[in-house]
Length: 420
Image (cartoon, rainbow, N blue to C red; front, side, top):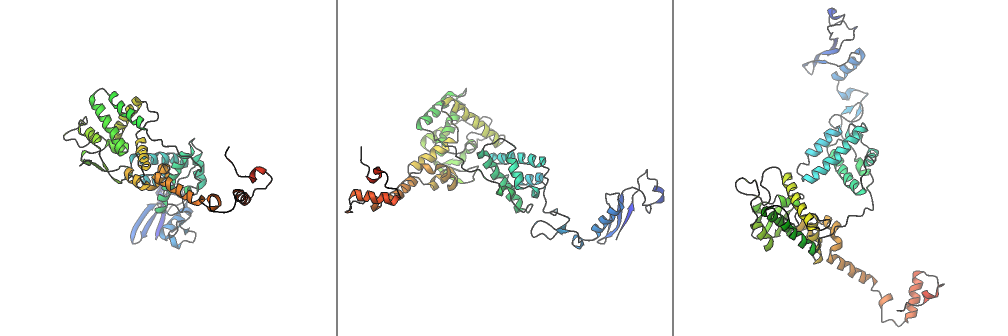
């Protein structure tokens, strides 16, 4: 049983009367035995009636109180005054930090997008005074859309990140619903056309490698990077950190940084020669492990350095809108134009077939031929193309017009078209 008493402060007039004196406003403490152990703690209140209720809550388990309700999380038997128990309640800040900690294996660019979106979202929830994850509603998601002037395509990407974040919270039972899933996704968004490089553009880019830098080291390095992009369509992050042991027996073997898929591609003679004469990266200590990176510093710094080198090449080439990622579109387009399937291109680029189908389906020759054959089958009917019927052309035309539901008010509709 817990006994209540006031712990008098030095300035209290009743300090000399001892703990039994309670007619003052000093802090209230409790002392006694709880679960066969001594329990002595401040109740953090000066109100005697409230202290009695707090002591009662400590002495009796939550299930014995009639004024409590079950936790809002389904399947939880803990009884609380309202809302969710401590186990199933998380602040927005804590949830975001846990989300980032669980996605450290993703690429730097993906993590950067996650952090940027959730940083803006955290500021928005703070402004709305929404402390816990379960307090966020679909109305709050809709209001977040209006806080910044962004395009519909950007909002699509950010809404996908928010949906992933709330699925993460639902899996850990910090909330019972995904409010971002009920927010409307923008529709009829026209994707940006991915134009591949022409052969003339590639020649200009390769020629511009000879016009950058002050020494032969920069020019040889730039040429090898461009040839890698041309023949392998690797991402710039994979080019910048390409290890020497990944090129052997005329093939390039690696696991892409972004998707983690294993890619094994042949290395043409021109590319192999450019890699063989490539100087050791500046700042390398000991044996060189990489083609373009000394191994010092972070991979992020190495990727930025390679990006700057290629940016100088693209500026010197004069090709409008040139960037490293267009080499992926170029190789994908060329593979599809010669009859490769979407699955083949997905293996080459290290993507999923759904991504290739979304961006490159229009370049697939096999797909177009299949569609054309299907349409020829559909419209190759006796009504239009049959030459064996004994009915005259005028009669067939009349039947066709009648089947379309035209009124015979216009004489021109009752006669077949004739070449001018």
